[in-house]
Image 1 (cartoon, rainbow, N blue to C red):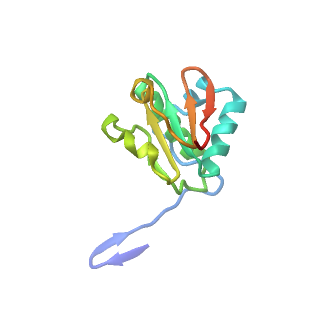
Image 2: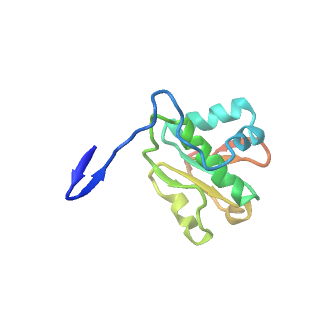
Image 3: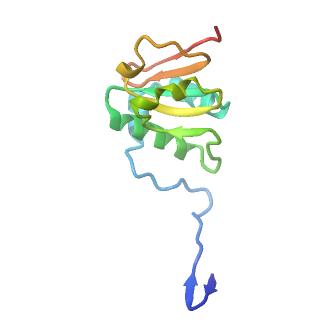
Length: 132
């Protein structure tokens, strides 16, 4: 606890061994993906691979991304975090930095991306593109 002027400031942290509070339904990630695909997704993000979550349901993109970030606790994501990437910013998917992004499938249809892990939440599929 600190006192600045006449204002008392109390800093608190989460109790040990507890997950941070989720503001979304954390079960939806596990309803969309099989356990092996959840682990593959977790592995891809931990290895700082460029990862794109894809779903027709935009709220699901945010829920899945937020759940994944909560599962990293006490670690934190070091790449760029865009749970719902606006369609006008899709060029960012060509960037060389690691990221976790969520997009609608129609936004990337017919596009080519190098070394990106695509996670199709609606179909329980994970596809990886190779360097061309």
